[in-house]
Image (cartoon, rainbow, N blue to C red; front, side):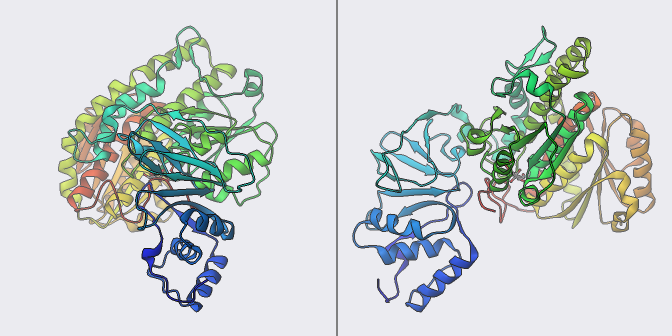
Length: 534
Ligand code: F6R
């Protein structure tokens, strides 16, 4: 070991933005290791725990990078997904994972390492998922995967084909991936439904549930765990599953669920919802559920992701790679799959074939409805021009549209950095209505439906306090239009399908506002596409 300062150029463990490499160490060992290194004269150039790894590798480096990495990895506590590059041999990348995802992409005359296969779209279709305690070495023309423990037999390797389209990796005619993905939603919903709806059974079918009809029929309750946008899809799922399948559902933030010791009844099915299939909290919640002996299902977009592999069964969204950090098409695809799941479970319980067939037909009409909703884009842009300088927004809806209000507020927050609150419209009077003033626009989700009159009276309460209102209303609804400053129309669809269409103008509103504020729409500050650390 040397006590001389070790320049970063000796070895670098890089944290790449968005999909690339993340490493997190538990705080105590990190601090004690970094103090020890500092006492030995190492000067840290960043405040990231990843640099501790780079400095440790540099300390152990004696010509052979791989043997230094092999010495350092057993010293680390916590989770990591590492890409290690030395300037002495820049054509070689060493990868290692423990707890954080790592995927190797096999190209021709080039190989890749990423934490999410979406990052490889447009480069290669052939991937190998690394497992914990494995290391890999990549050159331009060759790659190998080894066990960290040299005494163990070489791991068996399976190369998987990912089903990308050629156009997935570029923005095409769109200015941003987010806008492209918003416009891809009709197709994404078609893909989510393809081969899964049956007129004969008046139901839906899923290939990978891995639970027989008896087990599903015997299920008394469902707990959904997820984070962020996927959590909001889960909340829509709660309304759908309770109404259509008559199954009691609880939805929990995965980050809370994983450390909570809630009593869970027998015959409870655990459902994890995740676009990436790699979110650390959702993965931990899934593992905790399995440990407790509950059957687990996952709704994932990324094929072969850790959660997709570890759940007992699951359903893929088939939405194609989602590259913009703000989730759009994954949200509507998740809601679509949850609706089909509700139909499937409902047909085992309380739904007649006539009711089932009606749902099948209504689902099939949705891609066209979404296409029609996208025509609001120009109107939404004009509204964005009016309000983009506001500092606060409220998003309000009830029943099926309450989770959509939460999602609309999240979209605005994450890409435009404007403070926004999503609320059940009727809760406003219990406190948040104090926020209403002339500078605070409220986005009201108020299409025609069972609670229309109720939402209308909530809207009037906001108007009475001078708050400007942007209404998302049913086509040609003059009554709403007369009450509000601005209106965006959505086609009339059955109430349980309103989340799918109502989400579209909210995604577009966030997009246009963020653009007008000069924000980096596809790569908002402080955010990563896959949150693979706690
Ligand atoms: C918001 C967004 C995040 C994710 C969340 C969960 O637009 O993308 O809130 O929804 O990080 O990610 P997944 O679905 O990959 O588990």
